Length: 229
Image (cartoon, helix red, strand yellow):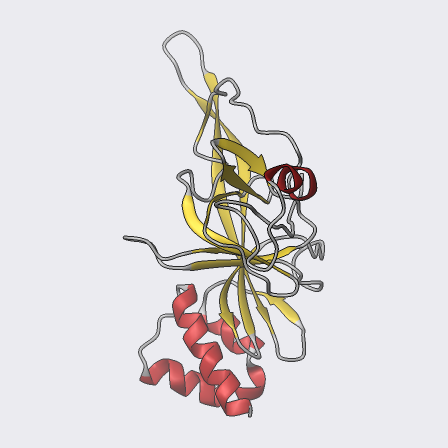
């Protein structure tokens, strides 16, 4: 199930330039049916990037922004849910290009975007990525959820335990639009930035970077962009 949308909201949900009725919002910009609480399935872990609602906003392809919403990201199905008037709706996956979780106590701002035509295993332009760096180059993170099974020994018989496990895959998009899947390791980063290899390596060493987290890779890409100009 894939979704993304462009919408206008009333009350707590609306685009600043347009104020349709609540009925229009439900009809035009969600699947139209509130999500019903289902019976709990015996699977450990979570299908969500964030179980708790985060305050944020969304933008459409024309950079029109909503007011603040309550959002959460279902990483299993690659869709966003919105809490609207006490009910949970799934946002359509066709027009909203950006979803932003605002900074909160203990949490940084997180930017999700779609519209990347040449990134990912299947080149799905509706897939959401976390954008860690957005310059001439880009650093994107695709979060997905895998369902794994493990045999757990028991007193009388073994049982199969199902678990949701998050998986992150990072991509660098070059200024020319070429995408490269990359583990967060120095040698792989240098291989992608080979046209400025010497300067980039010097920058990594002088700043004592380990290249084991997206923040440090973003620092390197910002430097890389600056020396290409």
